[in-house]
Length: 104
Image (cartoon, rainbow, N blue to C red; front, side):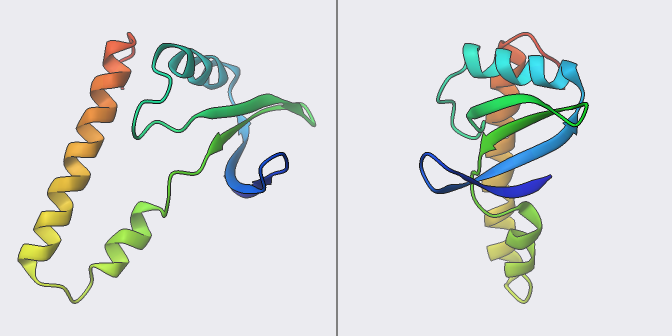
């Protein structure tokens, strides 16, 4: 997984290479069935390079590791509050994926 620049917009994007063809198909279908779903990155492009499939998606923000590192030294109640928000966001994403016919 790589951080890249989307040339048309200049924004940072995620480039994942190599990926399985089936993963590309699933991401395309999710993008078609649930466009604009909060928490699911928009598929910006896909193709093949050097014999491997790739996908380009929007970057949603910092990774979970960074969020957890920022919580170090915080009170248990603050860490718990953030953990609950992250849990709710993950559940909403899974609900959307399940509604599209996929089981994660």
